[in-house]
Image 1 (cartoon, rainbow, N blue to C red):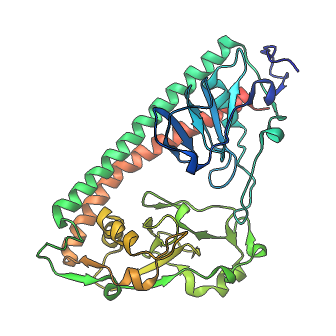
Image 2 (image 1 turned 45 degrees about the vertical axis):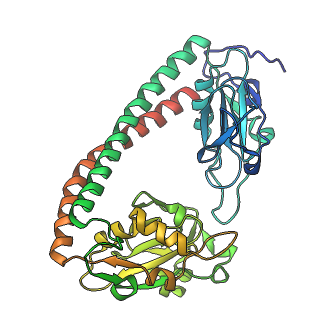
Image 3 (image 1 turned 90 degrees about the vertical axis):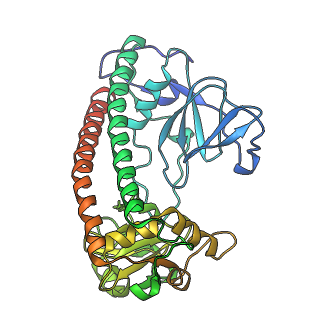
Length: 374
């Protein structure tokens, strides 16, 4: 095996991934990150701290090798490090770092893992995968095309962020801080305005209960922003779903992350979902709009209060008693409806931006298949 691959333009010719890159250093643990220097350290979720030294001296690609987000690839700059949950891939001579990034993403290394197991991928295995190789000039052309698409996606995501900020500002303008202890507005206990129920105990579900394409379980990791993004592999059969009727999520329910990623919450829009073991259900009673309650529960001061009161040492947990005892303001139903009407107008603009992101992502995937696929 030569360190310098031979470039080919014919689509029928391939090389192994490990011809294009080698393993970099990725041995740090989170507790090793001392925050005593200027050099960045990255983990699966992004920047996790800094150190006085670094492990990788050139720009490289980092791939999540186990746990949540397995297979996700990101670009890292020179003179940085990654945690041991990541694998640093160092481009060989003549390989553009960003070309390697898009090529690795096209492999979808995280696909095919069951949601009930902790996935692991290793370079010694996927490094043997056949991949396509282009000349340096063609690599640059491909990178420039993908960079243009990603810039457009970034603009649309910034528009979404601005719209989110607009809704948050409107909420504060109308209602103030819903948890403000110094305010003059009357407070109610969460338990007085909704039914609360935690997800099923782990013993209620077994490994063989999980199937592909069934009824999705909703855990905190499936709540992105204020939306629910289910995992097609973390689902159960019709029979198991029916046996857990007490944990069905109904349209209008609030599903709240109660363990690990505390405070993530979203309004349930569809039938057929099941509350996961790491979540809980808030089912509003008459006089409470789901959209308003979701905004309160996701408000920073409310989330902070929940985190302060959470129990547990190794992993913080919420229960129905803790959430039910929380105080919040409850404006009139007309005021709630006015706010919801405003958010629906903003949602029209959100829909346009989300559509644009979807179209751009489809274009990215199509070109990745064209450049790197069979």
